[in-house]
Length: 315
Length: 315
Image 1 (cartoon, rainbow over the protein chains, first blue to last red):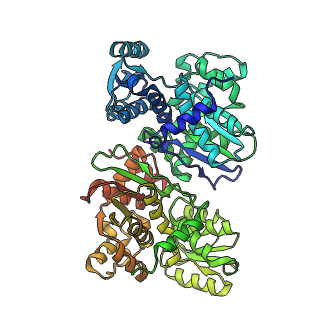
Image 2: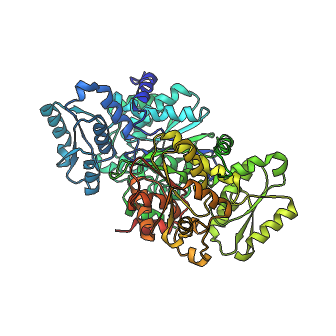
Image 3: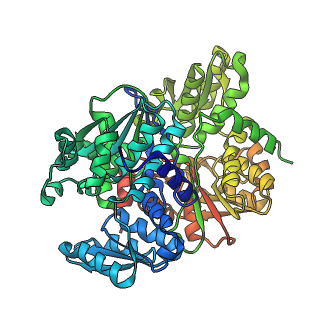
């Protein structure tokens, strides 16, 4: 049994309404082999699905418990999501970032009104916990938390609401918060649908873990080889317990497939996807999958403009 | 009095439901000067709002009158929209295109199952009329038709439904079908809102005409200077009559502003806009406008990948 249930996700959906965008499903008539829809989470205010989990987790706290603010450690989309959500509630946010984080990401997070603390990579977690203790702030982890998973699961509720006879749901897996939440929602609302986790071949620790039936650790530097920077994390005990139960299969995609799909999403679907955001759609185009009506989640669109320009120039 | 009324647009909205995408409004929290939402018509199945008018016009015909198929002359988004809509109805479509049309646009239109006839630029209209007469096909013009205007007007109905207290609606004007329809809808449903037409400075015939109070003709080669290829057309008698009544003001934007806005839409809003699709948002960012809650219509996203790569590489 998963600890996050469909009722938690339904509650999260009510909380995030009006803050997270209710993204539509985008039909892709150019996809001839398979009926394909995209779930464009790149259109969210912070450019990624992370707003759903971050906002839900802060909302659940209640006014008294969030009054002192929230803290997290992240250099990615979760950082911006927590900063944005905290400002929506009018409470302070502290984001602990590795001092190697590109300036553009620091600035984007600071633009949402958050206080940024830059520390050496290895000290992120310790500093975040210190800030939480010293300032009485609540820690909002990027995926290892039931309220975060429930928030991300609202993506699955919306998919089934918009396409009740969906057959295949493709969702990327990094830390596993999104895949866990979407899996719980889809299995509850449309049990016949297959939930397939997708991971870069160069960071395929979750796929290997799911096949092994237990968590297999890949060193961080091995996972860091993929261009899909949002998927370099590994599942926690909590998310892995969910993934084992709600994911039907797991497949990998190559770096070339990710780049080609970024290009195709820009030119045929007219959406900007970051590498991690193109991974699920890449599986729809390049892997043998069960037949039927297929939804691929485009998780985010925060990409270096130079990288996007590069893939647009590919032959 | 305009000949297209809000009731026509409401009827059109019912007809296109389930075929045209019900696009959401995308809030843009990075816009600090002005509360800004985008209406992302680039997400439509053919990559542009044109599906609304084309589908509505074919639907209105009724089964008997469309049985022999439809014909149009266009090298742009209307061509793909008519081809896509005709296939949805299971009727043949003939698209007459100038023989100078880029191969990629011809292929994209043919991919929707349309028959393409390439002719010298000057013979487009004559050939389309001939095909219509000889094959008993109905002509679906790109903007000079009440049913097309009514279809495009559904964009305005959706804007007011999603943001009832909208203050400013920015809509590009080329032939004027979209601006006419959106203007009629917004003025009927939210009379206090200002409807502002936006045009490239290099093809500002409609702005000049609106200021003069009568249609001022610009030679085609003068209008062709703008990068915004969807806005090189000029209003017809029918659309100009609507524009005069429902447009509150008209402004122009420069080519540099269009390019900069394409870049910004890709990086901050994570949507791909063609040059014409960036024009309304460019006005929101670069022109003095009435204050308040502002919606800019992103009309389409069918852009040459090399051009998009170029604007992404801008400093």
